[in-house]
Length: 254
Image (cartoon, rainbow, N blue to C red; front, side):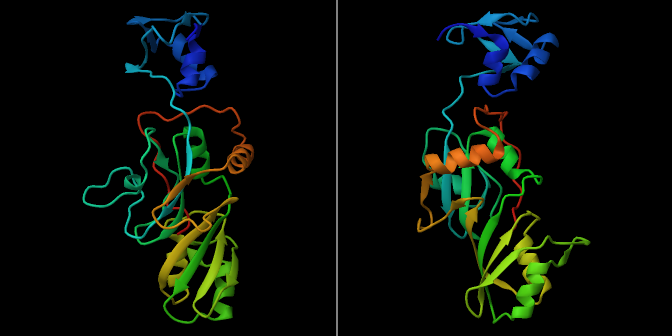
């Protein structure tokens, strides 16, 4: 590997952007082979030089991977959870990936996983209004008026849920599309209107669909899916910004 500017290497390893790398260097937070380097024009050879930020050794960036998993019921959306099966047990890859957002233990369906920190952060952030579509089954027949209530919004935590798209599938089943991600939102909405969720499956996140993939299976996102996702998030060419672990995913609408 040829030499490169120090701030560029900081960016490529995902620790920060180039601009923040310059700040880190000027603040004396970066060491090369044990010595603090404060000169912005400094170059290093990543194959030979040992670079540390705040005492943490930087390693070459992993190849970015983007997966779609069909989460089965009974699995916890977590990397580690003592005494429980976790979704990471279903994925056998050399790269370390993390789930984007959450599905609760009793829910099934589409879960995205990646080691791209910037994509993870943006998809998980409340300001990104991507659609999430769910198939819901309740324990007894649900009326059209009740479905309209769900579509119009119900009060949770002192404020109405945002309007949703709701379409009946049968007497006890319906589809619902949300553009927000409150904690266990669908289950709480259904409880508010006097029903109880029997089954809950997420079938779409943004333009990415679960399709016919069986429970427990996973696949790589297609080139078309990934290109569109990065374009929507304005992340083409973005670097990985995970630190030692990613930020915690939110419960996204289930």
